[in-house]
Image (tube, rainbow, N blue to C red; front, top):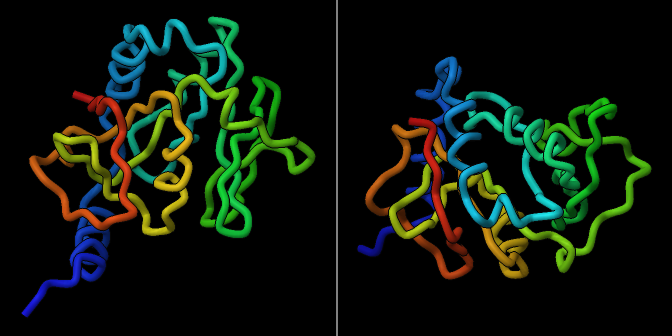
Length: 179
């Protein structure tokens, strides 16, 4: 009998959501230091990054570093099976959008994927080849088709040898953990 990867991925998602708690103090800062040390971050003029929630690898220090470096920061907005990169500024107030993902003001126009230098991707888990276990919507897999360079952020305990893969899954170029 052939295994159904979607069913196995769904079970793994449930397990990880049950297990993950708050990120250890200092872990987000270490992640920021690791990303800031990459040549891709240094060279990027525009980054696309998620605003972390619910035990995800923390992104606030990375966002603040990008602003301090004069970079344009964009965050996701999901509409109609499409994810856009929308500018996010230091003065913005975010509110939960689709799936509870924090989004900047509604009046922001999306930035073209061609203008994004670096995509920082969330994942419940990543494997050694850069494949991720996301939340199951496929938004990042579709977006990664256009990405110049992508970095996945992962809690160290969920950086694994191999994850189940489906034909539509897209890997990131680099995985950085919070250890």
